[in-house]
Image 1: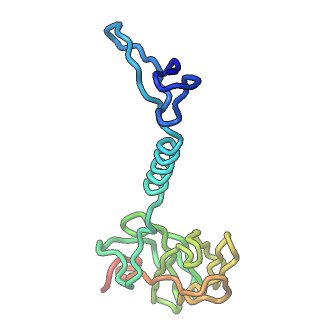
Image 2: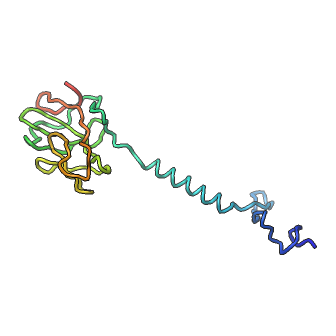
Image 3: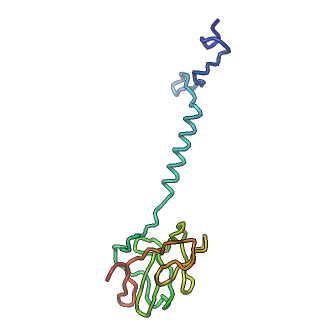
Length: 169
């Protein structure tokens, strides 16, 4: 004997999704199938992935040692201690550190730690990562203490009229 759903039983057919009555703008009503749990979970996963992709930015620095293509003053050489470094931004606004290994010579490195992407901070003759304690040499970018295993990528700079300038000389 057929039940209320026309298939028999208690009116709930396990092969059909529940339907909801929806009012249209013109006053009519129609039945709409509710989404399945699978559709809701997949849609939520796609939305979460989209947010992660949109929020993840690159470091904005080059790892090939080429540095910034645009040339322009970054910092006055007199503001960079000999044997130390200062925090700065490259022409694109990415964080870098500028060092002065010997009087009159400038070097620069990405300020993004090669371990997990935190920004390093100058501290005398070294650069410290506040996230996991990695330390780098301020004038060579070399790893002094891990967990980082790779040196900081270099950024091309040169000295021009007492200014540290982006790009090769």
